[in-house]
Length: 111
Image 1: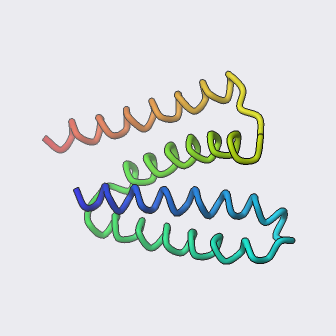
Image 2 (image 1 turned 90 degrees about the vertical axis):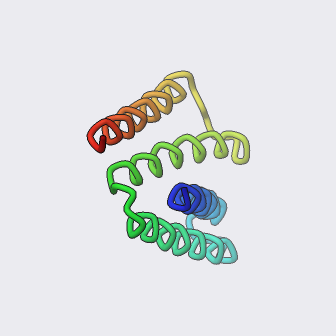
């Protein structure tokens, strides 16, 4: 359970770092580099701990990627008024479905 909590933290930090990178306007607004760096370092640190705790890399990275893509796209739309089209939403759902298949496939092999 702790691994999933750490993975959630890693996802939140990675999304925050990516949004901070966007806010930095091509690295021209340097104060945004601080949360960007802290976010990425923290995210990778937590992800490393998740893997050390035994969560399979395919599952951890799949959940990380799917949640990161979905949250970043949604928050980019809300915060930066970036486009979020129906094909993009369908793509996000397909990514999430793929990760769920990986997770359920992993669980069926461990029994």
